[in-house]
Length: 410
Image (cartoon, rainbow, N blue to C red; front, top):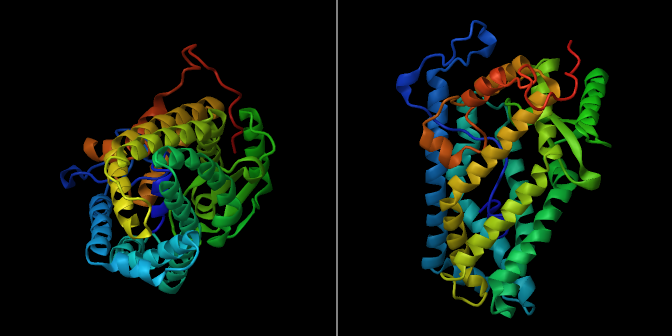
């Protein structure tokens, strides 16, 4: 049930990390580069890790649908509705969603525990204690209960009041998406981690200079203690308006060198400069339209909270079947950001070596089966990104564009 309310509106994710698998008979380095820094060392552990998450991706969807069907068919949903009856229907809907979240989270907990806690520990990708992980799990569930309850209540109210409710829900999804982008860095993210100004003054200055060359003014650079939850790396540019910021995980700061960080952040800044935030929002709104348009033909109820599991099943299934389309869009904008980052910095080798470290550090298969990449990869497969980073130099061939001056090297 975690974050399931977002399926009502956002319906698609256009950015984020992906884990995928590869056939065990290809346990060999996938590069012939002379330098080890450009060679992903593919290990049996990496393949096993990737395969586990491939299976969990599909099993998790089926299991989640099964939980909702169980709640619907066994009368649990009716009991929840009866237990949350109050005078005001909007409040009743919020209470229903909150209790439904508790029930479904409990039923899904074994799979969540395995995928989010046990597997990362098996592969040494986290040092987080169980109590700390459980605390984050509880916070996430509380956020879902509060924000998700409000969104679900609005959705049910729209279904009750309007004949063409799916149009109302679609239009209502737009401000919800925008609000989520604005408040997440300011309110949601700090619930789980501490964000502080980047401590390294030289790196902070170089990142701000890089942002200035990219046309991103007024940026703030933060580091976050993600080592609390994971040993893997990430960095991103997020927010809108007052919440706009550059964020680097402390794990990335510890594992990448100066030029690798500059190269990676060139990619992240590309998302901003190329308006991927707005394009992603527009794409999400389009996918929401498609999902809700189809949903109206299968959901004929008039907004009784008891039928919310049915609505979630329909929306989730359609969204899942559209995954190859949403993943393809995400891979497209990620590739555009890769090009921008290289044109901005000219740090081909540093960017490629960073991608190698990302794959090895996260134990992600760099060259997965094509089906897995097409269905669920939000980024091009690591091997494709490494090859591209090493060879994309249009400025050497007089192509376009030459890009701004390369980042200062250390």
